[in-house]
Amino acid sequence: MFTQVSRSLFCCGLLALCVGRAFGQSAPLQLAANERLAEQWVAAQLLQEVYRRAGLAMIIEPLPPARATKATLSGLKDGEVARIRAYGESNPTLDRVEPAIYVLTSNAFSLRSRAAEIHRREDLAHYSLGAIRGVAHSSDLTEGHPATTLTQRADLLFKMLNSRRFDAALDTGINGRYVIKRQGLTDIQVSADLARYELFHYLHPKHQALASRIGAVITQMKASGEMDKLIAKAEAGLQNIDLETFTGASK
Image 1 (spheres, rainbow, N blue to C red):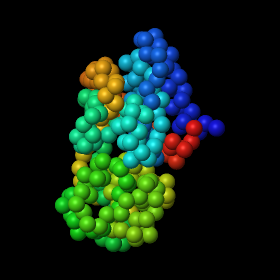
Image 2 (image 1 turned 60 degrees about the horizontal axis):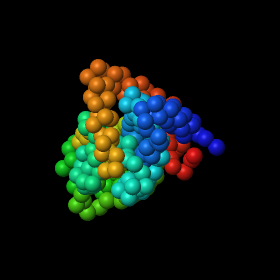
Image 3 (image 1 turned 90 degrees about the horizontal axis):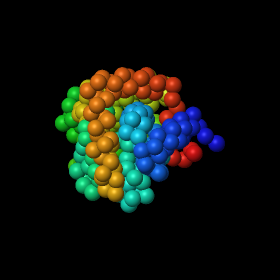
Image 4 (image 1 turned 45 degrees about the horizontal axis):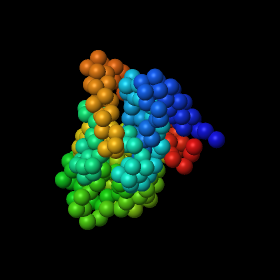
């Protein structure tokens, strides 16, 4: 049975498939997205419009981040919706589509009752941390950190934080605030932005020829201001979405 999100993604895939056939594209690209993450849902909405304008077809399957990486590197998936620049540097066989499609911030979330003082990334060294396994921006902040607990999902991450399993949870600003609201947590404080990362669309090298075509559409949408409007619409729409349905487990 289709969920609200999977039905939307499927319908967009069919629409893009029809457009794609008009441009000689016979099959939709199978793309992976990191499941249950707000920034990935927003980026997916943006990329759907980019692909439509480029005359390309796409179908998105949300997966756990580490599994998404393996599927894309092996060629089981044709690309990934959005990852940071460092992800491409760690996986140089993939083709990064320029320019960036979205921007995320990385923040530390902690219990107010613990009074953690985290104002910049260097302050993380004084605290035990929690992060989502396979997420590149968190891996960047926790590299070499001696006390990091990894979990598979953001909802579990914040439940563990609330249970005092670690001092601070690392997540994107948009996703952390989304989870806090959904779980009804009231004792959580959020740090200033510890880092900002541009999000890029990535393709398996077998689709290298499509990178410039997709990038040209992104450039045009940014220059016209259409991308900013689409971002605002997607971020506003996120409040009505249950990201538990944004998962590869639901078809």
